Amino acid sequence: MSRRLGLLLAVATFVAASSSGAAQAPGSGAIPGSDGTLLPGGVEFAPLDATLEVVASGFGIPWAVEVLGEDEYLVSERFGSLVHVRDGEMIELGGLPASQIFPAPPLYLGGYNDVSLHPQFETNGLVYLAYVGVDYRMAVGRFDFSDRTVRDFEVVFQSNAFSIGSRIAWQDDYFFVTQGMAGYPHPDPGAQDLGNHSGKIHRLHADGSVPSDNPVFDGTAGPTSIWSYGHRDTQGLLIEGGVLYSNEHGPLGGDELNVIERGGNYGWPLFSFGLNYDETPVGGMTEAEAAQTTVLPLKAWDRTFNMAPSGLVRLEASAFPTWDGAFLWGSLAQQRLIAYDPTTDRTAILLDDVGRIRDVTQLPSGALLILLDATDLETPNGQIVKVLSR
Image (cartoon, rainbow, N blue to C red):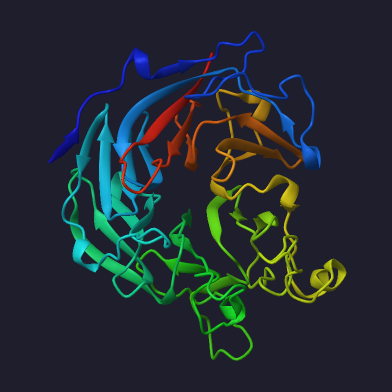
């Protein structure tokens, strides 16, 4: 059934107003530091010369947006709904295993997580959905969406452990899916346990079977679903140029951007550039020791710039060519859009005070699309926002 109709028109379009060209987000004033001053950690303000246009509103705790076309999307919600958005019309989809979903109470990331198209979606119509089931365990299901209705839902992967936060990325006919740590107790040692699916990135065939060339770890008889381990809470996953990238929440500081290697141990909770919540060091390793036994991040940020990153895209032929080649993600903690350019080691704030960005992607036109979280669990006011070059 149709939940909401229509685009939000001129009143929902937010246009940059300052002479500096800084994009004025909903509710924001002039961006502090737009004169080029740096924040702690060398982070700079580099506001986009952009217009922000709300194209759909009313989501309840949205998690992910997947692009079907310039004005057609799928949006997953943590309370266990999947919404089809086309030309501003929002349709809540039936045919999904609602009875198997563990809805998200205030302290957990339950319900639906990532939604992702199979690389051959145009011919096979398959959509993949990561979710937390009633047994608190992550699962991945798929269904046929070729006629824009849900048909033939089936589970292709079932985790053996409690999960928070799952993202999906594709390489040919294989998919990678992340599984975060529950976090209790903290630090949870399960990320180092190769019999525990939490704190891992998994690699599977499209039908959910384990590829024969997956890593074989000490103590395992053969390949398993595990591709890499030692992850705390991976909130963004991307394959670009044949390379798998992820971003990850640290505790107090220690947010990371990683290049994911086959069989790699990413260190949690043996080492982190962040601190435990009681401000003690994580694990007992020095950075030099960690470099000998774990894969260090491509980039880590200390607690002076604590982001809680979410979503991940690398711009290419975008509407903002200055940032082509850079990684973009949302900051849940800071309510900003963040960019990192690995060629210059430059971290910048592109949008300020826009709300909690849960996901970010690039549209076929080159414009950006951001998914904003609801302001609280009781108010379904999450939004899809286009970021358009002026």
